[in-house]
Amino acid sequence: NQETLLGRQYGIIQFDSPDRRGIDVALIYQKKLFTPTNYRAHELLIYDNVDPTKRIFTRDQLVVSGMLDGEKMHFIVNHWPSRSGGEARSRQKRISAAKLNKHIMDSIFVEEPYAKIITMGDLNDDPTSPSVKDILKPKKKRENVGTKQLFNPMEDMFKNGLGTLAWRDGWNLFDQMILSSEFTKKDYSTYRFYKAGIYNKSYLANSKGQYKGYPYRSFGNGSFTGGYSDHFPVFVYLVKEQ
Image 1 (cartoon, rainbow, N blue to C red):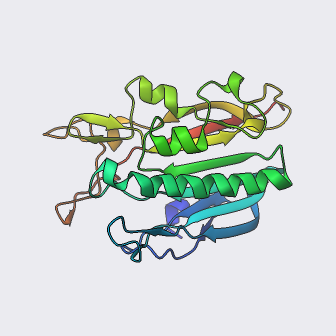
Image 2: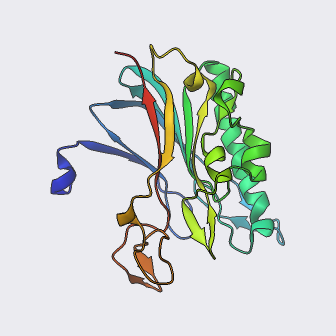
Image 3: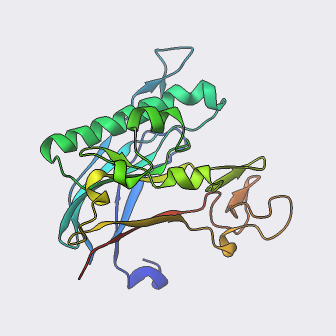
């Protein structure tokens, strides 16, 4: 409802997650382009490594189906469990998140073998991490993607040293958009994948100091710093012939 955004007519789909920090996932969309027809939050049930009776409360996975410019599509919005306690110690939690994600997509494919699905969000893992590589098993080349398989355009970017967040002078690419096979076909009479990227414009990065070049975060050391986020956004272009 901000004056600068009001004319865009954005809609939001959001459910309250059980996450202990109060973090939720949401889909924002332009009402003139996308019409939601079905949406649901899928709960991720994971438990503590030491005490298997203690549940870890984390974000749901939000599934929104609808019509994008007249074409049916499915979007899954993710924010997988963090690396708190270390990558190795927390790895199984993200593998569990990936298994839920795959289960959701497999359920859609049973009903629609040629479904257009984009699963996206902060996975807290890189394109080469076990959760993504071994569970979702996306291909990094679109020409290698078979029916009901996935394509991850972010893997080549990561291998080329690009990332969406920086930690101790190293870059990670946790923010990913992974597409189903139907987007990779070369027939552009319907919406297909054109290209993906990281939106890392200079105004989104620190211009000086110890963290020069890192994403310019909005909060640090418990106070507002005036920035945007500690992650750069990612994007995908879908195109079709007129």
